[in-house]
Figure 1 (spheres, rainbow, N blue to C red):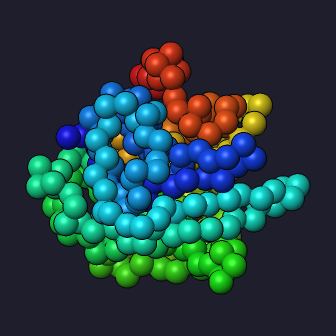
Figure 2 (cartoon, one colour):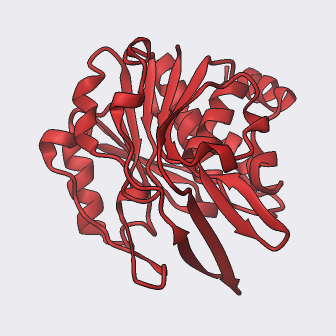
Length: 274
């Protein structure tokens, strides 16, 4: 196996009903589109999830009584997130033995369902984490708010790359500086502005191309998957960021899982990067 994503597949509430979402969904489908043999480990009530879009992607479940259900409400530029249900935590016991040595393992929590200490169970793999799902809390009504925190240095330095958005840490530059100091590679995404990459004591900003944005849902997860894959392949985070930024920019011109990169986009970008 090439790419394993650990994180809860979600049911996202929309005007017309529900659709599949979550970091695990966007990242796994992106990795699959990029030609990698991909699997997912999730906690879910699997019988109520429509997994038809996953095609040949195996999904291993920690059984639970309900799914994680998110709803995004927009007021102009402001987004309010609500968690209507939470599936609970994932168990590594539900992951088959042959899945513990993928080329890449992506820790992709959406709502505190994983433990970063699990990184020690994948010693032979490239290990990346999108940390936003560990920086969320919610009240009794399910209203989500940000809860920035800093992973211990002993955990940070076990990951090959750490990714979060500047909004996840409430634009706190002190938190960013601490992560940059403790991480092998840190990517801080800034939406339309692009991404900052911190590596070997240096910081570079990779700009995002101008596109006609329709929806940014899942763009960060698509960026992360493309970044981890390209970084593992090339060992160069600058190039990985350029590639992933282009992939993510294309994704916001479509809605939901339709933002997954197409075969033509991948071929074109690969030629351009080379």
